[in-house]
Length: 211
Image 1 (cartoon, helix red, strand yellow):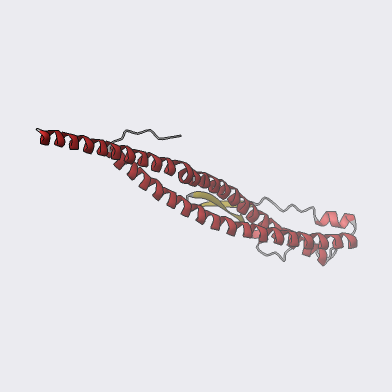
Image 2: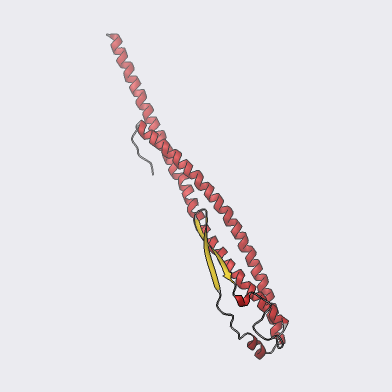
């Protein structure tokens, strides 16, 4: 869309001011986009690390649980696992990353879970494999909470990066070129008016001299 303006020096001054402001905004948005990308990539790497840790812990937990199930009778295993773990609480805080509000989640540790060596069943009739499996599963819950936080951050930052990218492109490829084209058009029209005025003045001088 071509910007239509009057060919006046006041309008030219206004266009130049708009170009300067748009260029400043373009630079700020590019800096914001670049910083968001750095934060985004760091969080993506954290997400990858957490997923690898989660897969490793799950593999260990299932291996220990399979060994425990092989050694224990179904009745003994069912009795050992009947004790309810109780509700879990997750605390959620928020912080800003380049004006993007992101969550920070933390699994609150209950007093009865502070000692991970204490199991909710008698040790005489169970095996150490079951103990190892439950310890791994307890650790997995903490990873899952952190993974939820990280993936939420990734989604929020990705949306903001896309919005910022569109604004940068709109300024770089649409608004600033249109403003510059409009300013150039006004300059050319003013120069044409100046040449026309100068030509008329010269003719007037020639007429005055001829008299």
